[in-house]
Image 1: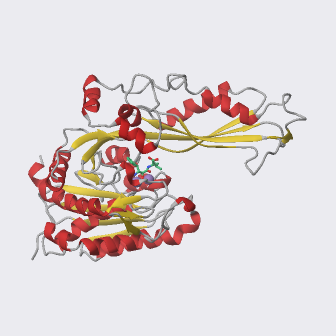
Image 2 (image 1 turned 30 degrees about the horizontal axis):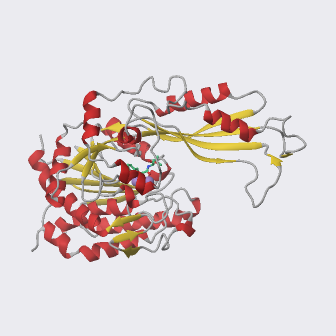
Image 3 (image 1 turned 180 degrees about the horizontal axis):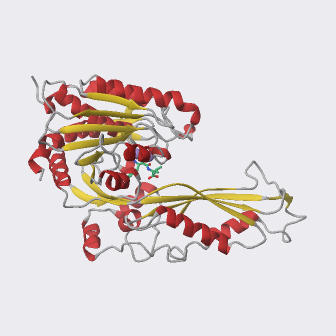
Length: 457
Ligand code: BES
Ligand code: MN
Ligand code: MN
């Protein structure tokens, strides 16, 4: 019989083929016409877990998309790891910018191109295959394992939080293991110990009761598109400091030690600029690019529209203009509080020549993992054995809101062991994930499960 690591080497191609099956399912959670695909993806994962001979596999229906749960807990005296991942994906549009179809996975130069390849099907699947490497070689798992795979992460996990609260006993564990982030760089593994939170807002500015001729009325009637631009321009000053009163009140400032740790990371700003084709970076004065992109709060327009968008020039003064604005949050900012501050401020600076409506979309809390947690040390060792490289500890700017809920509801830390790269183009056209990292990810996960008992307190 082979060892778990040997089994993973021997079955490399089979694992890729199975991942392709999952990637072919367009399980887009924002698209309500894709309910059947969501169901198919959850069924695929439940079948996969069932084929491993785990003690229990169950699909929980929710008012939204199903949650796939599994457990295999043969030990009384070993830690329990709850593995979290999401099988829903972002929409693929704009489809014409993909070099190969988003739901027909294709390998080119060692990269798997498909929507969800990295975020998060490819990464979540590494753990399913890691567990397989024990079960299919006749070995018992080195620790207890539970899986929770959801289909609503990309829409803010609306049904997972109530599920956690309702099933605290079922989900009891010593830690959560998540692969849904990026490594610091190619061949440079890292453990992410901080994620930002999110408050997402929509602003609508309404002026006259219809679109107007911009010559007949222009100059005499307020233009909602102009007003919207003015409001947005006032939300930050020239130093990139957000002007919403109270916005920074609960921000935990970076300590000297935090800043030193950031400064020591091998970040190449020139390569960063080059990869984005930009002449210079931009952000809050007094902070470095890494601090700005992972540990400082932000405010950004994500979409803005209104008025004429068609071909040529139509002379029109729009009656309405809209914007979607996201704010990334850091400890200890409260998403609900920040949303309220935003709403109050925007309403207060709007002129009375227009009506302004501010609404709130989903949000999420920031999270920081305790660097002394033993699970992180086991994760680092596992990475080091597989990648043969010292692991870095870094914070990331993206959000996985459920991480804060795992801590709040279940009282456990999360180990963010990402196998992706920032170049994976998640949420963008041509999303990709390297075959090599998929393979090393499976090995790292299996190694982690093996090493964990040695680190347990
Ligand atoms: N996996 C990402 C989050 C992520 C990406 C964290 C890269 C760190 C590095 C996740 O699927 C995601 O896209 N989250 C959303 C938030 C969610 C509430 C829609 C995000 O960060 O925009
Ligand atoms: Mn994700
Ligand atoms: Mn995502």
